[in-house]
Image (cartoon, rainbow, N blue to C red):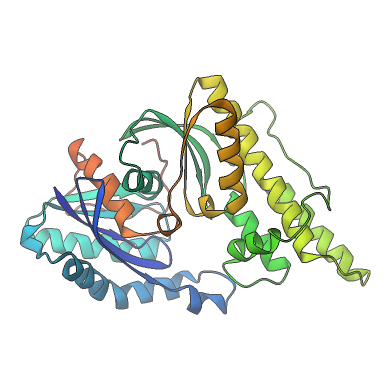
Length: 335
């Protein structure tokens, strides 16, 4: 079964052709990072306009690279939630138009479910059930993946997501957008024990995260140093902050897995590219003889292939839509 899949939830216009949820036939991503860099973050209106300009060419290239025409496809999968509403609408309406014109089934796909499904493309033997840590710019979740389309949230952030905390801390240190990537590189050359930073916990919810206080602590540290004319080591501060965030993520994730009896752990989302997080989870799983899966770097960020992977399983579960499909800025992963 071959699906054309479309992703436009933030600042990447992406399309892919995926076969049986596991094989990438083609994948095209048009990034807007350089344009948004000057603003220090994604400008929703600009992102939406660029999606309008790019989506036709991206889809055409994905089909050309796959050497397939629309009438050789079996369906069209599209990210419909969550994300920037204007950006999502571009992809959803484009997919609806193609579905209407061709008669191909339209498959709505949840963005975070897609990130989890990126692992199906990289690990042929990976199957539910497993416990997944989903970490991205806007989301930090611990999710039970009971089967391909049945998920349950075990823990989540109460305020900022891990990726958001990384980006804001990096911006305060003077790094360009997207800050998390630059902070990770700086941290590799720093001493993670140089600064003592808080490790917040949520009372009564041992699997939930809270990164707002940690983010504020590092920002206040930087501002206080500036007011006193002191120069802080960016490498050391990056390393200390990265360690604090990683400690919080891993502690809760391992505790949830232990309490719930999971020995198969998966990581997904943009922050799964963080080098320390990847290493530390590998060490923790090896120590316990647990299975551990994470996506290759090219599948950590937003892409169309992951939408096609999850779309395949949504289609098998009968989750299709008609012309009434709309974009949604917010939507829980366990709908």
